[in-house]
View 1 (tube, rainbow, N blue to C red):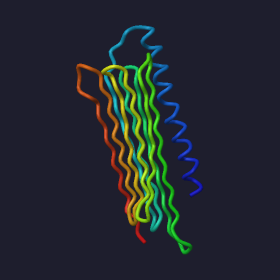
View 2: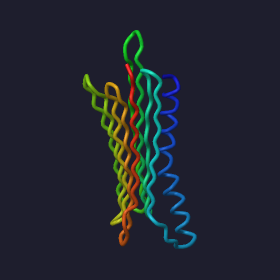
View 3: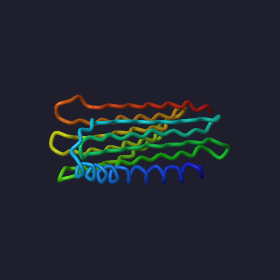
View 4: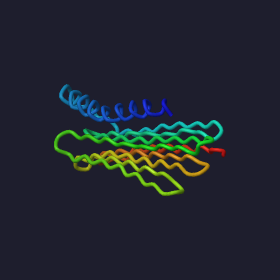
Length: 171
């Protein structure tokens, strides 16, 4: 468990800094010369298990025009003689340039059967938008995480990327 916390903190720091750096770089590029850049979306995930312990995580980002949105979700569980310990978390970040709107939300749900985290981020400037959503679950016997990221500029199709990870856990 000690390695999960530093990794989660690093992931949140990177996700929080990425949209600002993207928007700043985009503004500098537009000031130099007008350029046509296509919307982009990317996602990534990983998971592993060893016996009754496992970790999982997915993340993604979408960017179009002066907008960007990123989310991530991580979770881990371990069962031993003293019982089961689980942790889950997620985060989102969104940024726009020139007066657009950016929103983020993160909701965690807990019941005796499952832990769940839902992170969402959206940035919009007129008809140009970027969004990302991550849903992570820790259930008995399984860890799940799914991230879907999209970006769109008017006049073209949206860029889309989805990553789903599932890790079975034995008791």
